[in-house]
Length: 283
Image (cartoon, rainbow, N blue to C red; front, side, top):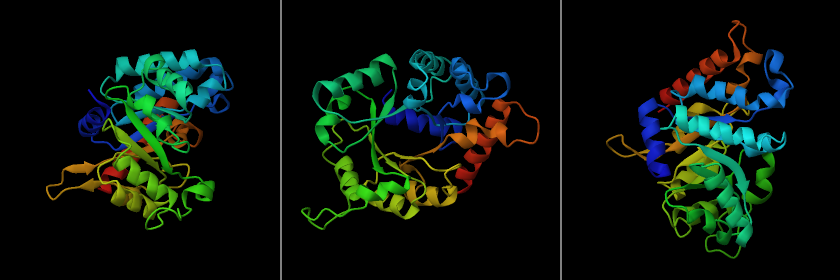
């Protein structure tokens, strides 16, 4: 099944717009696991098991694994997710962006080594950095467009004086992704939840693309504003432009602020359920 079909099916099956980001920080692990990078797989697999029926996607961030020499644990985790949650697509958050044979190797890493269903890319160096990823049939390519960090405005919000209408950089990316760049029909965009007005603008320019929206939860993005700005439906209520709302730290480390005595997986499930329900209530 191609990425977009898998995503929509998981959303319908689990009644969820929530993506849980897997950003393992051993210093925040619970109990005896705290500070032990050899427990990265165990921690993430427990989160997956606890939330797999509440999400429309999982998003492991590769840097959190590579920093601890835990790429082998990421491979095991990818296999675990395919085994226990085969209907849930996995987005590898790698933010790759390079040219030629290097891009080909990054594509091989994402889709052959890790067998991800989609990968995040930086479009800064242009279309030829994306093309090797688009050769993989049915695989998703999700471009950074308007990111949630304050420094995103340094470039993304600048106007392009030599393009008709002088769009901002992020607007130009959205137009290209909706149009000529989307050669395999599996392209999406990253737009931060901290900028709901700009989510709405991206949705206007890219009415059918899935939007991966980080920033709800620990970064302070508003769930209601995010859904209203990004989710697009037709007159019958059918989704024509979906969103994938990511929460990482708020779910993973819910045990840190829990007062109920739940174990970390139960605490993660509770927060994931609350977030999923809040997103659904905003539809």
